Image (cartoon, rainbow, N blue to C red; front, side):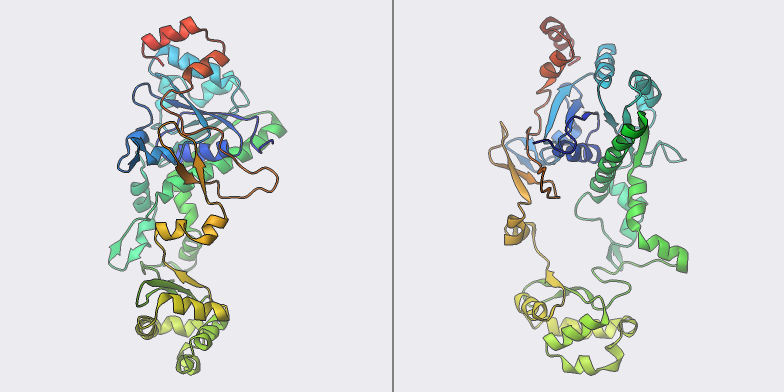
Length: 394
């Protein structure tokens, strides 16, 4: 079965998470991805432990399936020569080194497009390749703070980061989407292009209506925990046994909530009938709701509200998510055959394709696992490969 990206070749020099996650998405869609790592050392995410699984970093395992892995010393002339040879028939080149590093190595876009005019050169960085901050390193945590996410996340007096690496992961998605779009453009023009993808730009984009609201009003939302600036009640509450999310997004749902829970006193209270007034009286209403919900079990709240059509749900642990029948029915996790990790499970590609479903072709590669195989494919003989190994170039 032909996958959507089958036939495209990606040379992936990225490390850690944003780049590897993006190229993994392309690989899941059928692209041939060759992951290039430093000999003996490899991608630094291989050493991000704990946790590890049979000695393998789960950080690395979760972002590198469906790739072939090779090692090359990019500080050697022979290593650079091999990269340029691989670029000749590649469709995509991905890197996330510090600004200026690729140019110093002789692997900048201006050089590679002369070798292959159709190449899509995707450069991933923290702050982007232009502007006064272009030389700064940009890690996920740094960007969650710098790009404003932490200013709106957490309790009133305490900024917190998102639980997952949201800046890295979303940047990887933006990169994969942009690469796919650019490859479509090559079909039309025959020319490749340079993609400047940054964690900063991605996080500003995800602020979405909040930045538009700032330009409209000159103000922006403060941290409110699980609450919503414009809707009440639209937040988490503590039930007697665990936390529950209530999402009353309009006045009709407020009426249904009151009917479903048989809270006629709140239904008849004029102060709470309209959302604009519920926002105005947020503190007193939330106090009333908090007291009432604290006397009820989460399961009972959800049952009563779902019966009348009010969106709600529990705040689940990762274990509860993975064992939930809906998550299992969606086949959200897949098992990967791995030489060192029996029963390796990783999140599946999140979109279901009716005609071209994704599959696992390669386990996350061991360091340099496919070096010899790839070099033989581009014309190197066994003796030359042996010499390159002896000099630690591969």
